[in-house]
Structures are given as structure tokens and as C-alpha cells.
Image 1 (cartoon, rainbow over the protein chains, first blue to last red):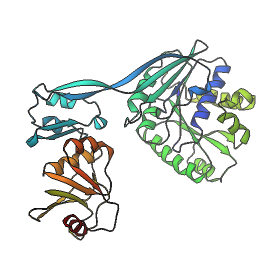
Image 2 (cartoon, each protein chain N blue to C red; image 1 turned 120 degrees about the horizontal axis):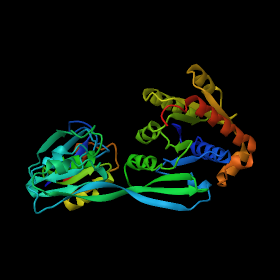
Image 3 (cartoon, helix red, strand yellow; image 1 turned 135 degrees about the vertical axis):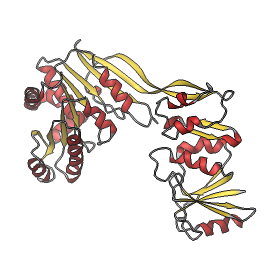
Image 4 (tube, rainbow over the protein chains, first blue to last red; image 1 turned 60 degrees about the vertical axis):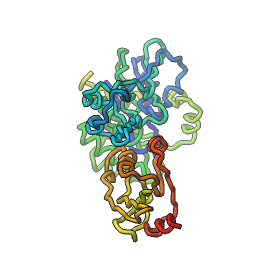
Length: 289
Length: 105
């Protein structure tokens, strides 16, 4: 079963939850895979002492124009949906704007003069780590300046090739394409929020998006005790299961920011994470894997 | 020489549009004939690549200078290759006529 950990708002504790679920399951002898899909700022792996096992580039094909064969007919530009080909026929000027290219290959199909070749351009990397010989950690890591992490996220999720009971997908924040491509791969989504106006506002957006996608989901309220009761009223009204509350606690924050898995220190928290996940597996686990 | 000015409206009394690629109008001024051409920007609401598409529009009209509030990074190499000069103007209250007067000084 695949579980995605997501939130609209950044900094609500997605990675905190993902790494603690991973750890709690590990300690209870489950085979677990953790995929850090937050390709713009992956930091889940840092919580585990492990060595890199494998790393590969995620590439996209970008057109290269052969100026000797190009007739400046502009057909490639007409085929391009992303304004990635700049052409001025009167002065015989053509340039590919690589940042705008989505690698769809339409320009190559358009060109009847053989003037378009393709070259691979790296978008980022997928790194794989192995823990205790049987648990896989996968990290999506995009290059600076790349427009969208989606291809790297997809490649990272595809890289899961260990037998597992649970694969935990740590989603990027927001509710746009990176969030959608991560949660789309999951059987169940845990939305992490906090009881603040920002937390609620972004939770609503995530809930609306997941409903549209027909996903099953529940909510973890992190930093419980902070803010007000509006998040509780909202999830009650929407009939969304409250999976777990994590108290607003200085000690937890201090351990986490020192790169320590809180579940390693507090068996109570580990137990909570484990029991919550077990319940999710029992209730929603038989829909796919 | 032709100069493109990004404008919020379709008259010389309109204020300078602070964005290049997604400006409302391009007003192209010819320093020799003193003529002007007003073009609604077709790239105003495109999803991606408004900057390069707008460079294409003005460059196809032989513009050599562009006056705007800000230019995006994706057009830098294009503008350099085409030898078009970017003029950044941060004075938001200036009208297109004010800018033409400044250019004529």
C-alpha cells in the first residue's frame, strides 16, 4: 500500500510525519519504502544514517537546430505549445529557449527538413539508499533552474522495486502539479495541517483537490494546542477522519531540528504513529497493492 | 529607430506597464518619422513563455530598444543576440508621452 503525506501549507510537518511513520513501521518489522518526492528541497533521507546505493539522472530531450538544414519555415514554432522556439525568418534567426521546452518532441515531428536533432538535458537526479538491507529510501532531487519537478517525482516513484508493506511518499507542499502527481500514486493520503488560519486555508484547498481526484484521505493535526479550533470544526463538518494529533511541544521541535527521529526517543509517539498506520492499512489497504 | 514602450492602455496618456512579456499594449515609436503604432499584446495571458513571444513580436517590427519596468531572465540571451537594448524604468507614474519626450531630449 502507498500512503502519501501531503499538505497545502509548507512547514506543517510532512517530513516529520513521513520519517516517523517510516521509523515506526521499521521498528515493528515491516518492510517500508520512503520516497522523498519534495524534489525542490528533499530532506527526509538526512534523518537516517545510510549510504547512497544508486543515482541516475532524469533527462529530457531538447531540440538542437541544424542551421545548415533549417529553412526558417516556422513549422516547428507553430507546433510548439510552450513558446520554446523563437524564430524570426526575415533575419534568419532561430533559437531554442530550453527552459520553456517540455520535451514533447512535437518540433521534431514538424520539421520535414531534418533540421531538428535532440540532445538530453538533465532535470535532476533520483538517488536510492538501502537501510538494513531491505528498506529502500528514494530521493527525488531537481536541478536548480528547472521549471517543474514532475518528471523527477514520477521517476522516483517508479524506482520503488523492493517488496514492501507500506511505501511512504513525502509530498512537496502546495496543491499544484507536484502535489497531484505524488498523491495520484497513493492509495491513501495523510494531510498534515496545523490549527492556524493559514493551516486551515491551505487544508481546504488540499481537501478540494483530493475530492476532485477521488482520493481517500485523513488529517493529522500537528502543533495541537496552537491557534484555535477552526480546523477541528472544519474536519468535523466535512466528515474527514482525524488520524492523529501531535502536541505543540518545544522538546519535539528541538529533537526534530537536530535531525533526530522523535519516535526514537518517545515510544508513546512511535506507538501512535504505528497504530495509526496499522489502522489505515486495515481500512484502506486492499485497494491496489 | 523604433522603440517599443510597454503600456497599460492604448493611448499616449496611458501609464507605463511595469511588465514586459505580459504588458497590456506595446506602443512602438519611430524616432525618425515620429509615428506611433499601438499593438494589443496577444501574449498577455499565455501560460508560459510570454517574454520570448513578446520579444518575437517587437523584434519582427524591427524594434531596437524596449522601455519597460522589468524584464524576465528567459529573454536575456535573445535580446543580446538580437542586439536589442533594454531600458528599465522604475517610475510608475510616467505616461507613454512622458517617455517619448524623454527619448527625444
